[in-house]
Length: 260
Image 1 (cartoon, helix red, strand yellow):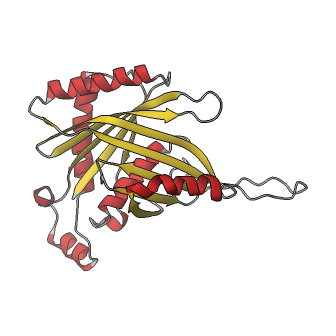
Image 2 (cartoon, rainbow, N blue to C red):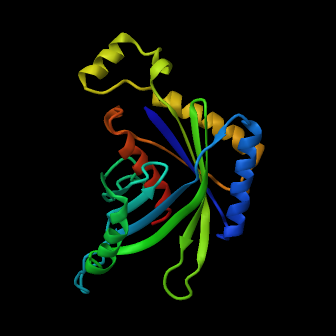
Image 3 (cartoon, one colour):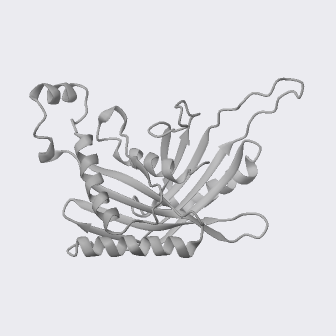
């Protein structure tokens, strides 16, 4: 299966020019380290985040903290050019507020993504509040050997008074192959148990280590503004390979949610 890790390098100034500098430095480092990589077609992304509205309470009652549900609408041409994905995440249960690896994912035609966003924003405004809209335009893509790498500048549309565009950071997605020959170390008992459960035994830790090693080489070559990088990996449910696309969508939404 195709297994991915996603890195988000924040831009402290939120200035598009600074994100462009970081992205260019990463592309240069990648091309210098791996000159045999093939440049693929540019990719693009549009991400919209909505948060459920807290129910009204009696003013005389003691205020209670509301655990929010989020709805993500993601269009990513690197994942599926003709599809968009709607991901609904339940209230976070972890101490860090992470919702990664949980929630429902549904695919819709990409042409309907804007219509769904408008439905939530206007007809269902009492239930859902828009948080932010992010995009990547003309991102760089490379492939070679076991890896596919996507690099893109994330732009945020400022809504309301003034408008304008800011850039919260840069994303780097590294995908490799998990399974196959790399799984030869699994014991027969482990494989038999996996087959009984209807899933393929895959060593995700090996894939994660491979991705981290490649990312480490890129970052060591050109430190991206010495920023604290966020790392998120796919979390296939039940350890199987059939959840590959949904796990990739959840990974992207976890990173692009930012602070939500």
